[in-house]
Image 1 (cartoon, helix red, strand yellow):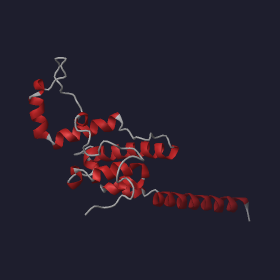
Image 2 (cartoon, rainbow, N blue to C red):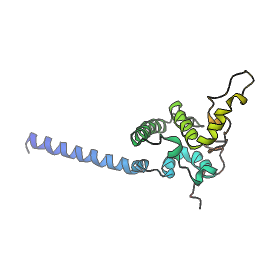
Image 3 (cartoon, rainbow, N blue to C red):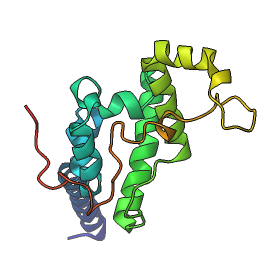
Image 4 (spheres, rainbow, N blue to C red):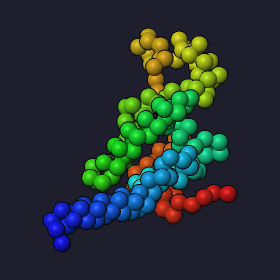
Length: 176
């Protein structure tokens, strides 16, 4: 066999192996599930079981999915850009095992969640903002820039959210 033909067939074989590995990685990581709005996609990684379980037992589980709180609403482009950024950060942290026992939301993601809280609860937050002079911390400054979860710590994920201490975090199941 000539060197040119050997190189050609070797290149084709390497290419096919690479394609096979890519398809295998897509399948094993359940990568396509992240394109959906299904909250169960969030528990593809075991570290998210506590967040899913506590959400599942909250009042938000009846009408709000993870996507509606954690991703931008309105713009499909912004939503998928945020999904890509978060997916990259999550896969890097989970692969390199660099995440904390108690998962913390990033500043960028916290801004999105706050915006979505205010949007969904617009009537209530409008009333609160209109009366912000009555909500103070005794320094004389109005409290208009607080995050919703500063008061509502239990919504929707509960107080305890680490890998070992959250009730119902094992055996996550679909509630009827």
